[in-house]
Length: 409
Image (cartoon, rainbow, N blue to C red; front, top):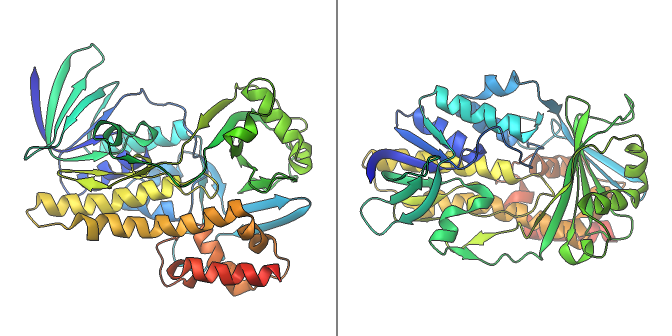
């Protein structure tokens, strides 16, 4: 069996893996990326947050992303029973990017991994990780190539960026239950045929079901006249509807009058898909010679499009720790990686939980929102969940609780 050594092995060529590879290569570190799929490949998580742009820039990939022609995004719009509100992410509390893109992930992820390869990362598509041993001085990873041949890689450090594949959590039995109910998403891409001016294509639209506040829809416009359309609800709720996934999705869209009117001329030309039980957690984000990035470690919920931002943040934090460790420094992975990452994740969690309870929706739709507070909320919706200068980040539960009481009065 062929045996290889490398400084850093990254499993997964999605956003977390690509940005981690770029950041490590910019530090002169040898990187091998293993990816089981062939790119481009379909994925959801298509509405980026402005905070993401800082990490794309840090990884040296900004020009490629800007020149790819994705749909410009400057905010988020919300709709429920005739109520409408919008947040412009340029009008926010936190410094930094206020605009970003809405992307077809097949193209976006391909741009990122090609940029990582240009920077010197070796990328192997259709290579599948079959086993991992982290008991020794170096991790030992067993891989099967497209021809069926098996080889091993012994990196100085292993980063799991396998997303929903969750390679290390499964192989090392790190998975732990999420505290979120089992929700599912049904989604597709459509030729939306929305008349010019009838819809702000520079914003994601989040629509709430008129009768069920915990059921919501995303509408993510792309630059080519198409959009990503999905609905999220508890699995038991979706199971009440007859037909296949497309029939369920179209029936549910028809139950939200504003969305039904918006998509009345749409061409539903792509089969719908469903993912179930996507919320995930792990017992630890790191261990002997390895760390988990992005969705491989924890995924909350798609409602505020935080997934890619968390993936990028994890890549940035982990790359800095790996570089120090390879340089011979002692790294406290809990203090320098896990706790900082989870601080922002837990901030997002506060707002996700409040969204499904309906209380955060009262804040969003309140007709007399204070401009300063709206800017602070806008910052969180734009991805700045690590900015502890923002009181609604530093004390997210207490501040949001008080705000919910005021808006309910």
